[in-house]
Every structure is written in C-alpha cells, then in structure tokens.
Amino acid sequence: MDKFKLISPNFKNEGYIPSIFTCDGDNISPTLHWKDAPKETQSFVLIMEDPDAPKGTWYHWLLFNIPSHLHKIPEAVEQLPEGIKIGANSWGKLAYGGPCPPTGEHRYFFTLYALDYFLPLNDGASYQNIKEGMEGHILEQAQLIGKYEREYDWM
Image (tube, rainbow, N blue to C red):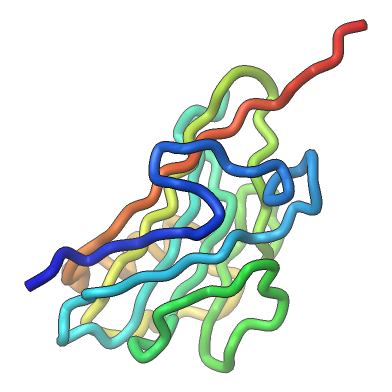
C-alpha cells in the first residue's frame, strides 16, 4: 500500500510558501491534494498551524468533515462543498488565515487526518474541540510543511 500523502503544486514540502498565500499577498489558501488514504476513511480533518508563534501554536485554518470522496482543496477556496465544516482559527475567524509571522522564519504545518467517522461538531469549533473529537478515530495522517519569513524594509 502506498503512503498517505499531502502535496501542493504551490510549494514543496519544507519549501517556502509564496507570498500570494500570506498576509503580504492576497492571503488566499493554497491548492492541496492528497492520495492513498486508508480505505476505511469516512472523513478528513485539515489543520494548518504555526508552532513557531511567539505565544504558542497559532492555528491558521481548521477544516473538518471533508468527505472521503474528495481529494483536493482548490486554491483560493471561498465556498466549501456542502458538509465541510470550518473551525475558528486563532484570530477567531471561520476562514483561512495565511502566514503572517512577526519576525523570523516560521514553519507552517498542514496536517490532514483520515478519520473513521464524521466529527459531531458545528462550524466555529475550536482546535481543542476538534482535537478531542478526533481522539481514537485517526486512521492515518499526512503532513506538508511550508516556511515563510516576512521581508522588512528598515529604511
């Protein structure tokens, strides 16, 4: 069996995220593709987080109840397909929030979890609610890491 994989045509794993996907650009979400999920998968959860944030992990994007027949999230997605729920990011918004680090290089982890059920949660769920809901239901996970550092003009 092939390994569950998450990729983006917009940046390579461990590579730099183009500024169009950040607060310095259009702040749109990148395209994400996945393949080789476990056959028993009922739904997926996608979490984008920055573990390098100064005050602890910062959650940029939380999607859950992505049906197992979907294998892609298109660039700049605004209207999610029916059934997909969105959690509250660390800004308190139900939206994608692109990289916007205060200083230095930050890593952004896009983690896709394959679950054996749908989370019994509504839009606006917190990271903690989603994490608790996934416990005991994760079949496998795939990860894509991007990096970003803002350029400051000190002149």
